Amino acid sequence: MKRYVILISGRGSNMEALLDAALPGLCAAVISNRPDAAGLAAAASRGVGAVAIDHRGFASREAFDAALAAEIERHAADLVLLAGFMRGLTDSFVHRYAGRLMNIHPSLLPAFPGIRTHARALEAGVRLHGCSVHFVTPALDGGPIVAQAAVPVLAGDDEASLGRRVLDEEHRLFPRVARWFLEERLHLVGARVQLAGETAVGGALHVPHAL
Ligand code: GRF
Image (cartoon, rainbow, N blue to C red):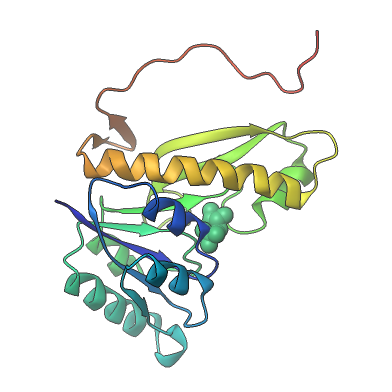
């Protein structure tokens, strides 16, 4: 059975969705760079080892990433899931876990990399927004996209309401993608990700919609 670890920095709702999905793998640990992350208690309450490695205790990014990698190695993880892990990783860390390091990002990449994605989507006036799960490369939120979920931007939306709609989809998308990885169904072909057994879906979502 494959082993995975989840990296968090805060609330940990995506982590909870992953743990509650009964994935075909073992969650060996949840690791936070912030000791006060609420998600650590949520992990422990589910019987998963919760570890804090406070980045403020390290003199450099390299030193922190080395400690993080050592902890991940201790758990012999095949897969590392960034679920609201809000700290930039060094290129050498990213290269070490190439092809087995995935992140969930709250936008339809390549639109809106970085932070404040919901506010920026509203400012830009897009009609569709959503979330993406991608393999991590040194480019910020720029690695090969595995899957995306789109939601409409509705009249009257504000940052909070749009963010909630996206977060609901994050909680569906990330466990689904993690399952595919653990089932060895994901393959990188150049910059594109192929899913074994993918079924074609037709049609389009039109927003706004009116007759
Ligand atoms: C999520 O929106 C995730 O996509 C982003 O940070 C947020 C983390 O939320 N990277 P949570 O900690 O999973 O509740």
